[in-house]
Length: 490
Image 1 (cartoon, rainbow, N blue to C red):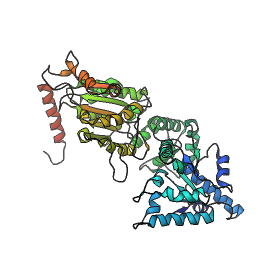
Image 2: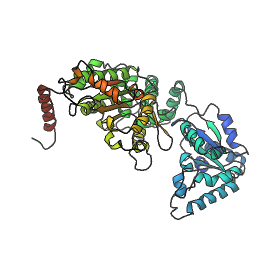
Image 3: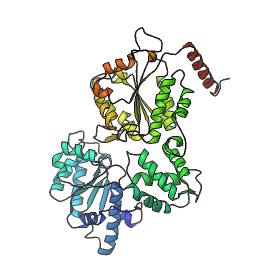
Image 4: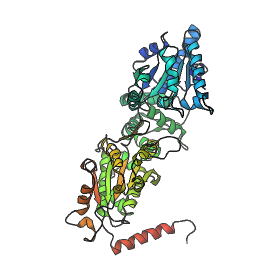
């Protein structure tokens, strides 16, 4: 049910830990003393919560060799899924929890769980694992060591205040970027062979990680990048990567084009607009607006606490709104599979907004997909058909770049590009190419349809005009060229 981390550390089976927290001496005394207290380690993903537990296990392994095994506690690591695994009959998982508590009370050891929220989640019979552990914890017979983020802690304190009162809270701060160059250098020195980042390359890599992966924290995201770099196939052995080569490596790692992340690679608005116009016919003005958003992203002038951009494409059906979104995905993220597409006509019913935040095994909700791939384009098709509850959810996404899922965990949207499409303002008779109309009917129709607090969070309302016969011929030629490239067609 659980792994003895101290025993694994003594046998050299735990992954090494690079560096240690600034207040390591006080933390070491907290967990090594005779007084065993249940503790929650709080911090964002990658800050080093699990690494701290490994560091404690290694410290305890050293102490057990010097002081004997009687006074130094062990750390048993498990999870909610391991505790309930195989428990199919009524009362079985409760009995297992009582057995775990009884064994720990006789040993004085710690029980470590990597996530606090699943322990608090109700089982089919209505009770939770944490409730089974609450009695022994309150009596001082059992000590729990759990991990969570700040947002999860706040939500758990609102829902389970009595259980959370049994824990002491230890908050871990993110390692400053200025210290990461040295830590990454020590980490890569432990690697056998493979490429190495020189001092300029390390500084460039730290800059890219800090800028383009805000959802993760140092030092974890830096170590993951170094691990990936040494596992990359075809990487030169023993070669010290320059700053430019570090940018190219991060481009392969993240999918972001080098032209958008490296300052030494020119990519102006006109160049980007021209690339978009080659694939999206008849929408030159829309391509120029989108290119300006990309240029702002490259220059780092976008709001760091909001998505990279929020665009509303307005126009008749079949004029290129979705095609421009696909081309924008390829240009910004390198691959069309980075598009997360939702048909908002499927979210018309009351209560359907909850499906955006659904989590769990097999879930493909918006929250789950963005958590798995935060560097992506979110396409909300036919936005005006969504239920009003959906717009309440989207207010936080567009305004603050975040969304809380059903478990209370924050999903970071700050590196997504949100594109919405609508047919508002395109109905009825009017001049051909409504984007050229003097009365600005699309923008007025959008403003009248959506609430002011939602409309004001949209960066650009992009009008698409109707296609001319010449535009249609160019589209046909473009599609024929694509067909000729397909295997099996002559």
